[in-house]
Image (cartoon, rainbow, N blue to C red; front, side):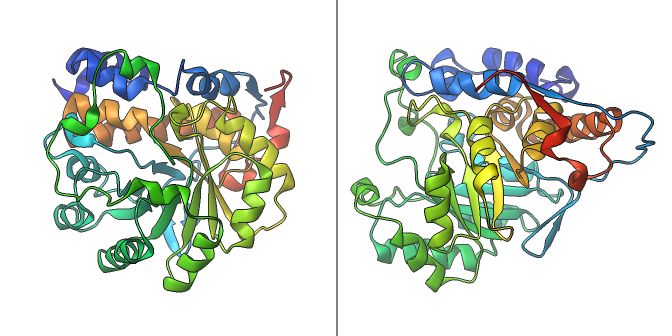
Length: 348
């Protein structure tokens, strides 16, 4: 397809459904069990209203942020997602290529089909982050840390919310197993059972092995946020895994609201994701206390539709919509995004 065939994330999603087989699209779209938690991500975002301030003369809204010493052009990150070669033969390489020339932090991980070595070899300038699923012993985890350092990653992320394969009705009823499709250069993790053997001390152990920022991903409660911080995390990633792993019914934006109220540490950064489909969604997350937001499925729509150019356009759309929302809503920069600019009448 030609790149100019989609101008919105909504249109990109519709095209992606047409441009891939039904079973593969169902795998991408599905949430755990009956999609309750997946759908809550979007429903709860829609309950929030943004209060505009007029005549603020916001000609060039500033979206730049700092990430542990790196200057980024946008607070929008690419969230880590696995099995991308089922949609494009080069999968994660092509995804990273879409953001290679942009100062956008781009996460991949041990569930990727393409190795970190190969992703980096084809994307010399990409700002990469590496996510570790704790599916192996500490020696294997040390190898992952070593690779992240060797291939110049900006951060390490530890996935905490995917202990065992979930029951996702939508993709199981399609009788489709994404693990069987697409090429692989990244070795399969050695032993998934290790995810059930570790505790919070794993984070403090990892902190002793690297100077890279360490992020705890999958946080949904203030209690777990506190434990992550106590064990040395530099950032917490508030996420319900796109509603794919545990049917908690807790949306990303609801968890952010609860956690940001109780966060005492100003040094620990907050990343959050869940249900983002438009620029105003990003604005809501930032107003509620997130420093950065993660985007998942929309990037895969772009990959399916137009490879790296589709990925690039996806982020151009979201960044353009964010800046437009800032201009029309009266936000000069990220620092002006505060909770008092929101109106939340309905309980999550």
